[in-house]
Length: 200
Image (tube, rainbow, N blue to C red; front, side):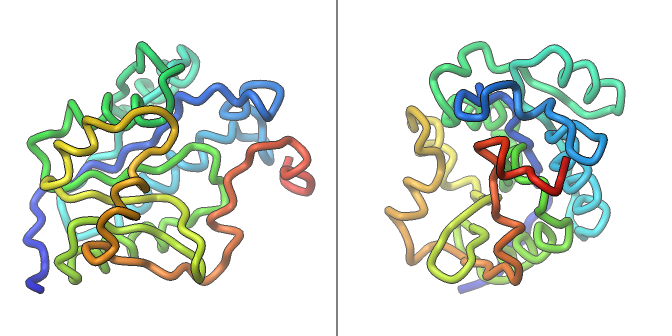
């Protein structure tokens, strides 16, 4: 399959979740002195500097504190008016502002161990593969981030609930680039505060 000729890519941080299992707003929870969501933001910013395609880091949130902090750093921020509808709603808020772009990468904001190098390798591999989607995984376990080419935008806009884009990845496995991450800790998303022992 021919590789992609990508001209514009959106790197979208999804920071609108409710953190019900965590017990408080985990996205603002301090990890080594920084709010958790800021690790994802820094990772995408560094990845944007490494990539050779035109890309822009953006944020989707429901929280005023994240909105103000990200705007002060120059990042476009979009508010999700219905975060209770699940992660699909946050993806769609971001996607609606990027329908003109060739591809969108979605990263969750509770994955502080992910490195910019892994994001770069996912995007580079996706571009070379010519596939319509890409996902980070460790062995058989899929994780985040995920990247989707524009031909999947109509289906992403129809998703509901908390299933997110992996519904499409499982539906069309032959059109997916699977990036095998080296360290499974990079894919760890924090759902419970004990998982942060040694980090905070």
